[in-house]
Length: 466
Image (cartoon, rainbow, N blue to C red; front, top):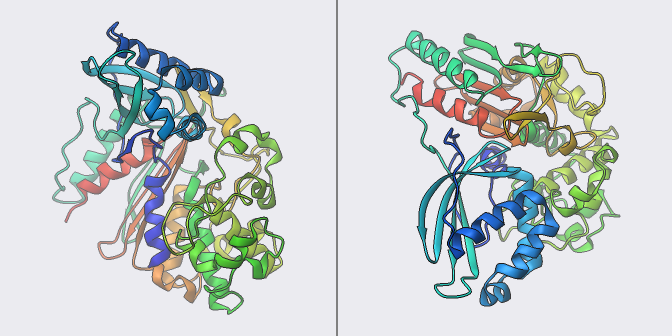
């Protein structure tokens, strides 16, 4: 199950925090502490200046790194490298707001910060031990629990206890505005719990419903992976075929010759992400087809030799979508509709353009201080084979049912053992977990950013009767 193993990692990789010094990842939670002031020490004032610069934008961050970073640290990690990491962090986290001071020393400050995209993070700032107390590095860790009470994780005795616990928990996180969306829990095809919470459109006061269509982010990669495997089963593609066989004009000739379909599927291609400074600088409305994504990443050098490493790659899945188009003679969206959605009965799943009139589509929201604002400005004109499609909880159930029944072809055989996949970005988070052995399926879809859906799914999973 190579492709599913890679897809299982997508839930985490959508929230990877690019660090200035070191890295760590655990699922994130939320906190409700009041905002705090930092100690007026040299280190405290530098942390305060960093947060202000982070929220102000790239020019301010450049000025901060140039003026406040230790000389040795700056030689080791230049300003341009730090700025590149900042851009990725800003995209995935949004703005920062300090909620708790954990520790403060002359050369070290640790804080808990709230992010507008959802995760609660701990930030450890290391400084020089003497004047001028220049910044050495920052370690960032997404937190499982930032101080709030969490329900116990013990498994429930039966489904009645499970449903009661899920109902109470869902009401709790919804009232706290930690979740907005749909929760579906199923066993052996029978829904045990199905409920919608919050607003699909806050301006129009339109509530989320069971049939609301949510942006599912990287869950779309599962459909792309299945489509490629269908073409492999039909012997129209081989896992060993290089990119150049199908895309002879691919901008990076080294990648075209070395990267194979198998590398792309398994995230071992060395092709990077399309999120970054180019994406930020591109008018999002102009990104409406798969080929529109290519200039955002395709000419960049490979990050490692194909097969020699593994790294999550949105760019790689865009390339897979282009290969699907070349081989099938259909555009990616049509192919997936005809060969995945239609046979599975997924009539409410598609990748519509963001300015199209789509009934029952949820607007994504990110927190802006004490209010919420739509995530529309961060979204491309249309999603891609790497993510950004829309679906409903019931359609995701239909997807697993079709896989189990063999309705999507023999290429889906290795996916019938179950999987857990997720997608997330500012203003969207979705999780689909399916275990055929126990018969349980959990689908959680949210129009808030991570970890709104992932946290709910994780809690429900811990309660499933054993």
